[in-house]
Length: 198
Image (tube, rainbow, N blue to C red; front, top):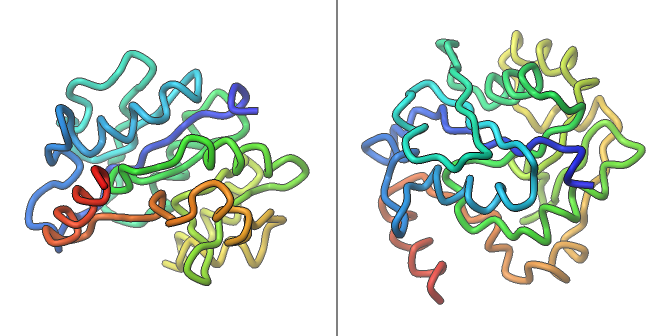
């Protein structure tokens, strides 16, 4: 199924709690963005990196292309809408540059689950994870409405036909939910680095 999907890494956040642009923070021999792209490049024929700062495009793999986000807003929907507009495929899988431990098997499972729906997303910690989901171009109208009203992404799932992957389904693939570890602060950065090598 992943051959009919475009991978997307959102890298346009403010990073206000991190203290610097976390999209270009070092991660192993790469950056946070580059590391996340590496995990998706083997799954998808094309990967889009959506961001405001072209520096995040440094050293991206050949399968990846940078998409400039010129909006003044720092809302995830801005990036998802830009990705859907630019994508040559009807479907995009979306994650964020600060989620470097994305499990590739779980990505495949979410992509497979979207068949017959307009979106598919993982549910972890008792709530949907919109930055670990698949969206079709059919979602664009609702997304633009939510963005105009400055509503959270998760409200999309109340409106469109969505397939939710349960915690049990996810746990069978990624028992600790490492795919959903995200980095907001320097403390998170150190903690997730430790988890990466645990």
